[in-house]
Length: 204
Image (tube, rainbow, N blue to C red; front, top):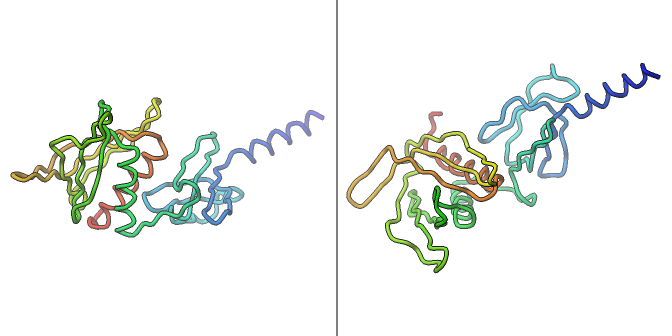
């Protein structure tokens, strides 16, 4: 009986010690994730860790549940993200307007594109009016993204050095911090900003 119990524990452990990829089409893949890039996910099959490395586009994945119980969600409500240039711009504006705030302040952000430039305005949450001194960022230029920071307060923090354009000058070293409500929302906005930047910056 002890031998059978040992076998049962081993089988159960193996069954749980895997990452599960949930696809847009409803399929699931039992896997061992090797790498998650901005656009693709690389993995081995769970039943053969010596198999070739498989690669799937992230846009075809709704979420990954890792063997330790944590998860990452890429597409909410099983909706396929439009990763075209215009679709990416629409995602950025939508998630900024719904979930983005100033760093350490309660003012929310309002975003809109002016050509390839992204204008960020602060919003007075009591009056819902735009505050003065909006800023114009060139996310199609040379940007440096830090790793997305997910905090215990339920917010995600996007840190990026982005070229700042103004009426009278251009700065190339402005550090922008966007506080995003909800870890999943922060991941989607973070990925969209990087994807937008890579539409223009090919060397990465």
